[in-house]
Amino acid sequence: MTTTPCLVFRAATHWFAIPAARVVNISAPTRPVRVPGTPPFVRGVIASAGKVVPVITLSMLLGESSRSGEVARLVLVHDAGRMAACEVAEVQGIEDVSDQPGAATDVPAAAGGAHQVGGRLVTRLEVDQLMDLVSSAVRRTA
Amino acid sequence: MRVLLASAGEELFAFDPLQLAGVLAWPLTLAIPWRSLNELAGLSAPEPEPRMLLARSAAGDVPFAVRVPGPLLEEDVANKEIFPLPTLLDAPPWVRALVPRNGSPALLLDLPSLGDTVVSLPLLPLPETMRT
Image (cartoon, rainbow over all chains, first blue to last red; front, side, top):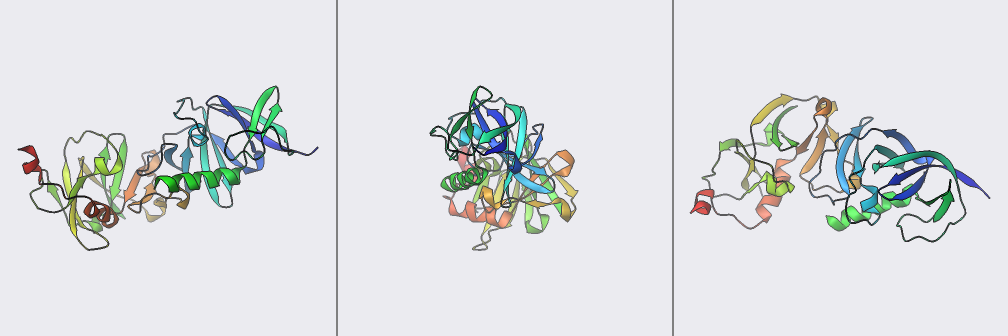
């Protein structure tokens, strides 16, 4: 069985895993600048490493109706030139997560399914699907 | 680049003075399309010293005005300190760029594009008329 090192973190009440190779950095949260005309899951934008990056409330993007308010870290992820900073409540660390399909989940962008990692049920997110989800969600709002 | 800064509560907006036809005191007395920046940006910030920014729309070259909270400040910003927004966000065309300003960031707005939005909305009566 093959595995991929993933960053495991909690956003609101759910635990997620993102392939570590897609993580640019983890930083302390800074107040983003709100951008008019964007949906509620877009908290705003920040400047990071000479680029403007949208700050995403992951839990809202993935289906929760309100923001939990608990933000301890920003996890900056990238895919094919697209970048986003995800608000997370808690970072567990890097864990190996199976590449085999996990348990079915209704979380969007979670083709990898849900896996048991360190005694927790963790939903594996694929960053390309996450970016596509952001893109389609902002276009629905525009 | 010289920018004109207007704060709206916790938010800070920047404008290019070269896109401005003028700045007027509130209330507006010209019968032209106008809106408040608060309304356009979805904010409810206090407007301690409201000012009207006059400009022309991009599409039809139509004169319009935007009420900004004030007070207004002018500041020089290096072009390399102006960062365009990512296309991922699909922000409105009148949101041009982010100006980080050493930790006190501002959104640079494009007045002609903002004018396209203002002139596309129903015409508001002059403020004096609204008060009566």
